Picture (spheres, helix red, strand yellow):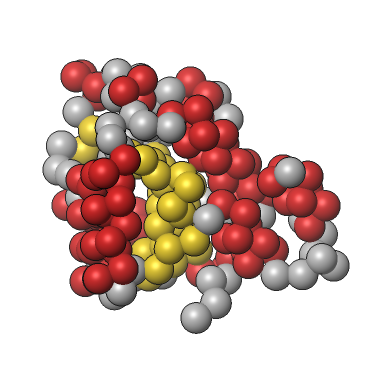
Length: 180
């Protein structure tokens, strides 16, 4: 199955100031999430951001919030984004079926969101180099579970070129420069 930009939306899950510092491979995660966010903006694919219990975990990291202007987010207390009515309604109203997921933590919010999206008839696509957890064993366990659940995975470079589709696309040069 091909992932097309016309039917896709990006989801940035809980990249928050008080949780991010303890995440494994956080520098690589940051770099890749910025590439993904920038690429989706180039391709005019909408992005939605969630924050888990902002009072305790803080706001979205500034590298992301400053890139997405005007910045807005959906507050949540459930681990699955789909349990949050505002997100669920926003997604339904968007008409998009493919949900490109990045953020933290792999084995909790990302996993539960992806499973719930699939159960509700959406196509979750977990961007594996744009997710992480506090330790890599938890991330690996989540990757195994995605596979067991039949949830699609990709990488930031792969998904951006799939969404671009052709070197003749207007956005190709910008995407190519972004992923280098």
